[in-house]
Image (cartoon, rainbow, N blue to C red; front, side):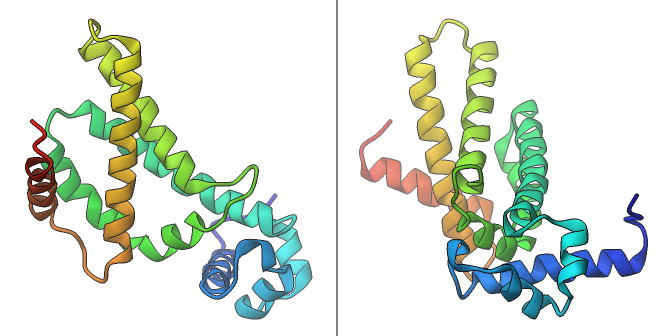
Length: 186
C-alpha cells in the first residue's frame, strides 16, 4: 500500500509528472522514452516503476485526473442556467493548469487523447441537457448542435490556453457575438 500523504511520495509524483510535461515541450509523446522522464525528474528507474508501468500509464493517470475534474466542471456548468458567472469562476482554474493541459493534449494514442475526451464530455453533456430541456427537438438537430457547441467550446478553450493572458469572459462573448453578426447568423 502506498502512502499518498507522505510528503516524499507527493514530491516524487510531482517531479515525475512535471518531468513528463517538460519533456512534452520538446518531444512528441511517441518519441519520449522513460529515461527522458527519469532524467528530467531526477528519479531512478525503480522509483518510477514503483508507481507507473511506463510512460503511457503515467500519461493515463494524469489524463484521468484532468478528465474527471473537467467532467465534474461540465456537469456543474449544465446545472446552472447562466454561463457567464460559471465561466468567470472556472476559467481561472483551468488557466492555472494550462501548461499541463496543453502538454497532455499532445498525447495522442489509441487509448489516450485528452482533447477528444474533453470534447466528447461536452458533447454528451449538451445532449443530455437538451433532452431534458428541449424534448421536442429532433435527435439529429440535438446531435448537430451538441457537436458544434463542443467543437466551438474546445477551439475557444485551446485558443485562450495558448495565449499568454487569461481570457476575460465578457471579451470572449463579445468576440463570438461579433463573429456571428459578421456571418449574419441570428
